[in-house]
Image (cartoon, rainbow, N blue to C red; front, side, top):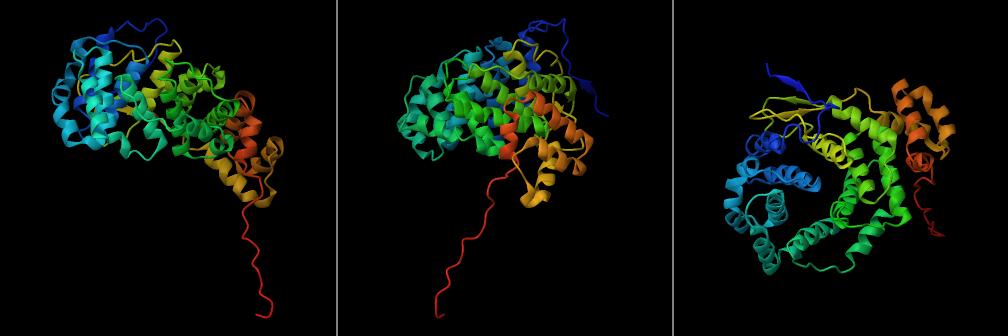
Length: 367
């Protein structure tokens, strides 16, 4: 039987109570105990955890970062053989140096990436934005070609983000992270893009999806917008629900990403975060999930209404309530009270606009 330890925030514990070196076991877990060094999933997870620590403004002792010595010493061979992973390889290298690892290899890597033309392989604007951000950190430039305008146009259609579409949601949020340099650069988005963030947050709250909701709150913070207390309450409750199972998780099928972004947000707003990581060896991050999905229940209830769907929240609440659990109704009611722009969100979420219909077929006279 594995030891299950509850992750909790203690009001009396400050950020430095365990010392910055208290993060060493967390880094060792990601560096050595979840994936094989250098494979794509190892790069993804380690890029995430290191970048989040950089975004919180931390500096770490060399002893905590020493677990990355094999990666750092072999980075030239890695990028030479796996240049298609240049973004993740550069990101990990830059983050290590920003956190305090001795060396300046990232500048030479970025120059090599540009000289080899690897940024030219990107056909996705989000990847172009990440590439530009990473290269810019190393003093290199990447072609703009109207990138900002396209990203802002994408995120300025609120209806896109009022229906379940994880790819669109995370693309918008990550675009904001890159454009704002993770909060280090002012970002003045148009009103429509800020409304899109409200739509995305209302949807995440209805789904009780703390992973997505935490990233929405971070994006709002980086845009200088207030964070709804309802959403923060959910995320703080979730923080108290995480458990760390001292066991391996080689397929990463756990709540590690939820855990990381939750702690990232809490530290960004001044709460205690990353305070209780003390376990040597492998760790698995567990977040109990409710048995019901309010979003799924509401989607199915609205779909069942067919042509009777309306944009009116109050009317749809009455019409859908007989098909919903009490918990699903309660979550939506809380959203109606505490999620900004909820009624506008629900009007899109109900999908009450003119439904699709096949074009009228032309009938040829005399046929």
